[in-house]
Length: 248
Image (cartoon, rainbow, N blue to C red; front, side, top):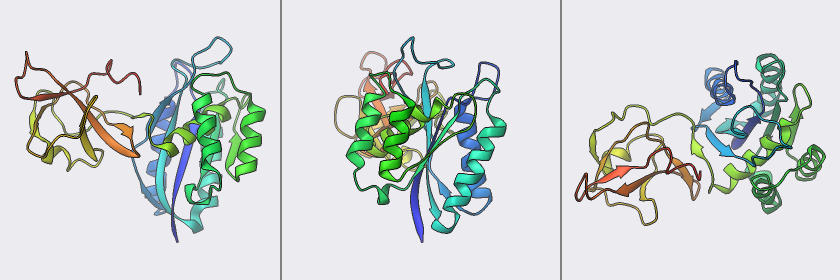
């Protein structure tokens, strides 16, 4: 039977090593190469910035969603753990979280932990206790294992579907291109085109593609947020800048 899973990793890198997002993408590539299932884009989740929290640059975790055959669930956990142990930076403190949303009896408890990780300094023990209580796989793969906090929090935030932005940019969309919404909706990482502070755009609305466009998570969908820019593009929308998307 096929089951949707969330796999989140955190604290795998240093300033000179491949980033956590790159490792998350590599896990997704392995899932598909092994024929275990299909994957969705990786999302980046910003967590609390505080002097008591060690992090490489931005304290963000990376979460991958996939639909896999249940028979490969444990194999995925085992392979991912070994992968993090061997591919993470020597001074990193990597953590791995894997869960099946359909089996969560109390998802609100997990989501609350995710929200707290955006505003509080949390303890590893609390992460392990919550994961054990909810039947979630959570494991440490080097160093202090501090990354389990961010791994659990990132999975929680992806589960809720209101936080995070996709890793990388929307491939195939040229900067400066003028495209109708109906064409943008054909992109595999765009489920909806929506105003930054308003409703979705109609299929015939036109959007100018800015530099490095990317989707964000809203209502468990990949949403391309846009802004009106009447002085530069009267009657036409534009994709949001990286600065405008920092809240995600």
